[in-house]
Length: 114
Image (cartoon, rainbow, N blue to C red; front, top):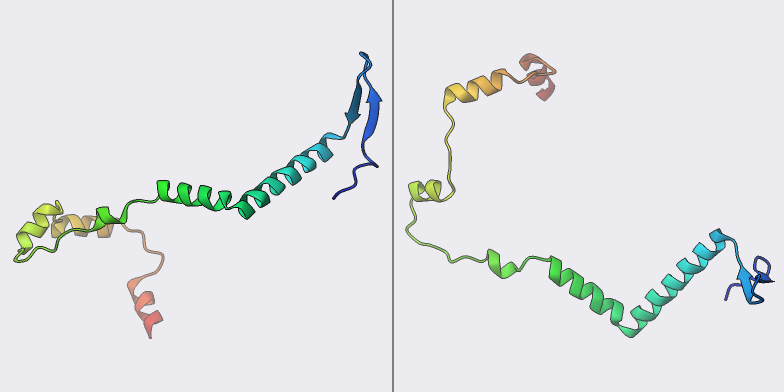
């Protein structure tokens, strides 16, 4: 247990009620301590584990959605159409490749492999 007696002031407000004055920084520390205590108690009672499990299960995708039947006798053309494959021509590839700004020449890169 933390002793706060050296930083807490007991005062009486204008309406005669007793109040406790504590520095804001210490109040924030107390709030953090209380939060940690609540988490510890929740962990001991199993509530935290239930919350984490529930949170994890609600955010995780259902693995069963990824399971598909294996199809037999599927040809290459069907795979391409189902995956919406868009081929690239050599000319388009060459244009894209020529636009790349290389830091080193081909000879330098090949020499690095030796």
